[in-house]
Length: 209
Image (cartoon, rainbow, N blue to C red; front, side, top):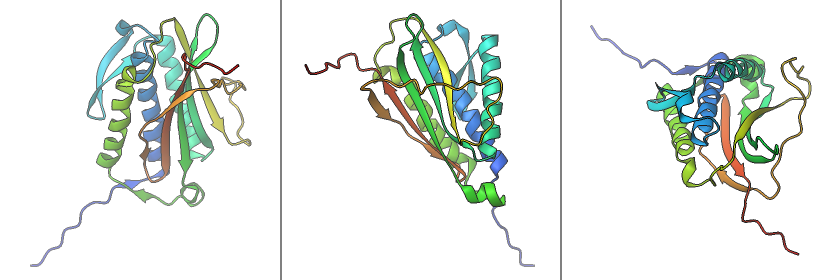
């Protein structure tokens, strides 16, 4: 008797895509905080994610912040309201912005409006995320040393009709004057496309008289 087999399709839903992107940001943020030495090495525990050794901070206050952040990002992504997320590293002493890790998000509006799914394999998405994580891990080779105590903050750029949760406050964009920029890899779930760019203070900048 003749038989026919068909490969299962790799279906991506809006909810699933939002979960992938928000989880990615959590792991990326932890990796940035580790590799840029915002917190000491002993504050992190090693885990495996995306087929790579990753690091997650154990500080309870930061873990709680990241958990709430991931949940809020996922909600905004599902609503199609999130345009970008920026992790900002600042001098603790002066508040000067030293680095901006910019994650720009493009959303397939048809998926948000009509609920239609898209197709892309988990393996392909993971490979794209792996490339970003490797670039973050090697950031010490292309970014200047942060030789002072630093703190971080996260900015979310949303559509203007989004109600701001009470845990968030309006903020200035925390820009860097005359920054150097490095474009990193991006990834695409076919519903959310994420482009990554890091800008940093150029200590060698000499303004012309």
